[in-house]
Length: 230
Image 1 (cartoon, helix red, strand yellow):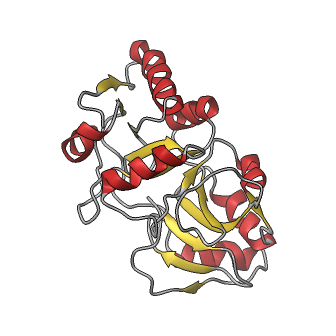
Image 2 (cartoon, helix red, strand yellow):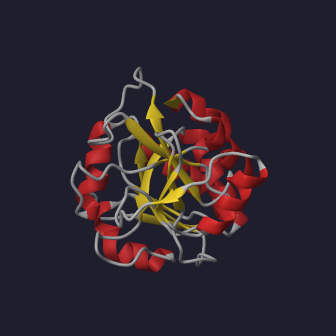
Image 3 (tube, helix red, strand yellow):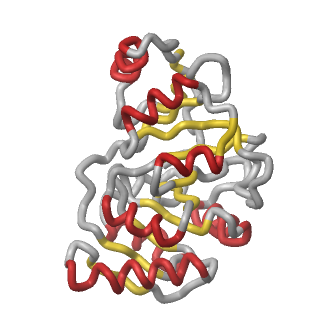
């Protein structure tokens, strides 16, 4: 456990490079970081470091039955992580990435990682936040869940994240308050038709419209209340 974290105001261009470098080093060392996204603040770790992912889950008070989603810096990374991605899922990715859409897909069996009890799936998102994308370009895919203790509201600024998780992280990237307090919308793309598991920043009707315009199958809203995601 880390007792002291270093905080960087990454909205200040003179501090940004130092913050990105420190966060990258922390991730490579298997430590946890707090980072801004286009939805809420995230708690991040190297997706390919099982011990770091376990620390992330422990920091949030979650078990392995709730694996974290993975943030990627480019849409092309999806094919390195996932297999059997339906055409309608690619339609949603093309329309919403980077943005507040998380898709659950079947993971590549060759991946050397352990995100928890994923049952062969992975939740993937490309955020629409330049600082986070710059970080992902350096670190590669990050396991990122909302920066909060399970049961508490997700952090919409760095202060809230530090209050809940400060003793568990090494680096905090402070990008100022978020512009939205809604998490990403989660769509399960592992079946024959998409299912909306969580309605967040993207409404179901909007997704319906995108799929209808492309003549793809409409999603069926699901009643699941606490899927993996941030």
